[in-house]
Image (cartoon, rainbow, N blue to C red; front, side, top):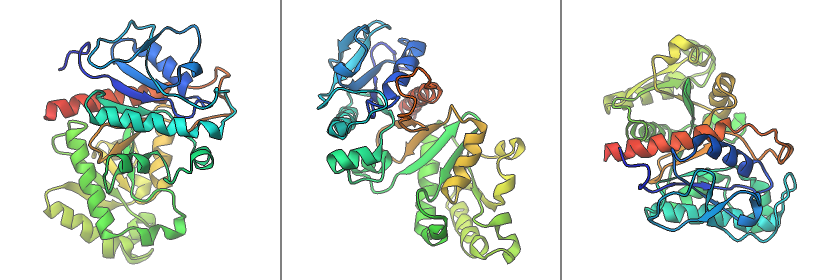
Length: 328
């Protein structure tokens, strides 16, 4: 295992500075201490004045635990909790871009991103991407990436994400199904250290179509696609009835579930671990994690933000970095 005092640190981006990102980072940092070296990409003016700051320089040892190790980003305006300012959108984007660039260059070991607000970025900087995940794929020049939500009890991948339920069946194609399963398989091996990953597929229709009585998609499409992946060497099963896929005994039989649509994946994981889930982007050349929640402008600056997901996102990124090091 690499010496924690000398290997590249983890980049943590500030997200929208009017949200809870900076609060939860500071809370997580206090708990982690120097165990995981981290560099915050943010504007120094947005940080508490009583917190010691050490500006990041490459190939240097981390500062003391009470310091924030900072890569300074110039934002246009001050940050006021709960009052997002579109004029700061360019700074939010710059923090992500610079963190990715330094990670690609090897100065950062991986990336953990605090929440952004897409509408603010669109209004203030003409942001053209559906969200963080797609923007990171663009920056890393990757055609397809996969969103996985993970917690100690469950890992899930939604095959389709932010589309109406009426569009789901048409959006599920053989090409997308196969490529997503392969990305999951490789990521579970290289990023999570699982030598022989087991993937369980949730059916699209109730009871996985119940022998054709409730639709034909699971029988005519998903079942043969799963068989093709099995023949290609993947340990994948299904489609399984989604209503019996997430109880403890069922979860013991797989490492990750491939679900057909957003709520089919997110309802079980948020029920099992609402505060501790982590958003992981699979298929990138760099490690990227994020808390599984938004900017929470309504509670920003009030001391109410729960840092559990940020803490888990940082820890998950560190484990993934080390799994990649071991794999290499």
